[in-house]
Length: 78
Image (cartoon, rainbow, N blue to C red):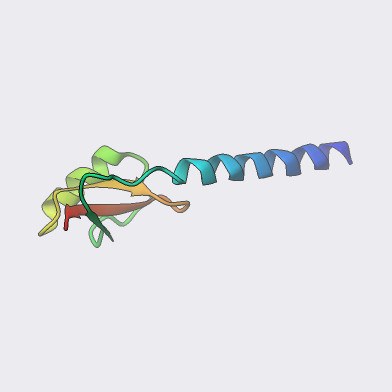
């Protein structure tokens, strides 16, 4: 029973860490439009890979990994 309690506690703690890392402040100086990449098909692990794929997509100037499912989102100033 104690192993089960520790497992559940570890899972809850892990989920809280993920939630906190996703709650970052928005940029104040200007608006940035984010759209899920149509070209990046796999799990997004590195921002640099996402950024380079997004720069090839028309109209976008960069990108980053975001969200619980780690998707690539392309960015452009609005």
